[in-house]
Length: 152
Ligand code: HEC
Image (cartoon, rainbow, N blue to C red; front, side):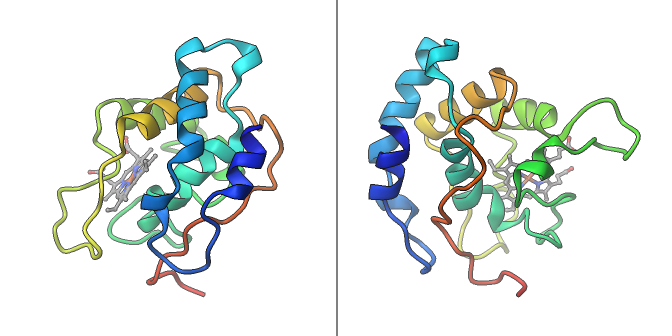
């Protein structure tokens, strides 16, 4: 169901379609409230938010002062902050998303202006993270948003 909803959603190579892709987020949000294994949040549900929000800066190489790329599932599983750290990027994502430190809205020179996550988006990501940031549903996700200042 979720995958079908994702594919039926906004799939475009043009930047700026995130505001129209809200239908499936309701499903993911409901799954988040239940928080059971049977309602696991898929990587693709998490990825759409990472793609349309975080990747404005967390490109490879990163832009606007971001320290790390968040382009792939592997990027979320990398050690952080040091290559030798026990902690992983996804564990750090938990605190910065919970605190709404990310997406980083304080730098007003970033264009287009950075939008905070909706409560639903925040809930979906935090649920995916609380479930261990698994590659549930596979890694083959649609690219929903393309950022204009991305390096080729
Ligand atoms: C406007 C650009 C921008 C966006 C959008 C953005 N980030 Fe960041 N990110 C930054 C910057 C700049 C830093 C470094 C902040 C600092 O350490 O003061 C950072 C740091 C981080 C860190 C490391 C924090 C630490 O403790 O060192 C993580 C994890 C992170 N971002 C995740 C995310 C996630 C997840 C999203 C999307 C929900 C996101 N970011 C969206 C710019 C951005």
